[in-house]
Amino acid sequence: MAVERFPVDAGLIHVFAQAIGDPNPVYHDEEAARAAGFPGVLAPPTFVQASAHFDPDYPLRPKPGQPWFGSGREPSGTGRGGGAGVGGDGGGGASRGTGLHAEQHYEYHRPLCAGDVLTATVTPGRRWEKEGRRAGKLLFSESVTEYRDQRGELVVTARSVGVMTSRPVEQEAGQAAGQEEGQ
Image (cartoon, rainbow, N blue to C red; front, side, top):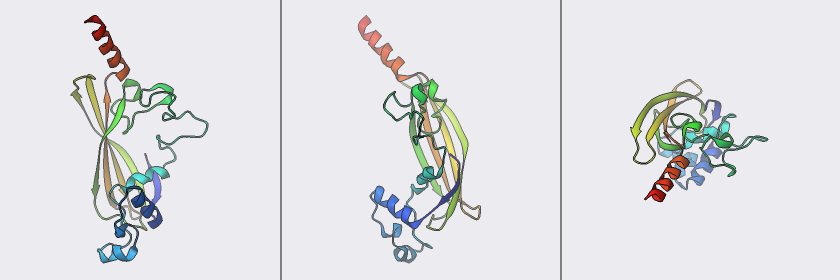
């Protein structure tokens, strides 16, 4: 995801805080935010995820006239029907297995407040493997998103980790069924 312009609006912050069930007044009352030492209405810690709504190519949003991996027609993340794993490429592309979003980390370099205008750039992070007990090799991949303000200053660094199995889950289930029949 690369977002060219993500305006941090007090109304959007308020709606986001309501959606996550956080009634803290610093998320909707400018006086409360200033009394707490912030320059304006403060954004909740995971607020930068809302930048996906400003990315025209966000892969988890349905596109008119195109099949959507979340339609229920095909299993999500298996690589059929245009599916894609969650959490970046999850460690190897949707055709290699089932992807999951495994971790999310946020590092705030300063408070994010209403009035900021962010840009986001994404770069690949680390990749590593671990041996799984049932699904074979687990492939991990990290994606690093840097959010910078209108002055180009780094505000938030978000790290997302995806994990994929080295073989599709259907293959594993089929093997397990075959083993039970052979017993």
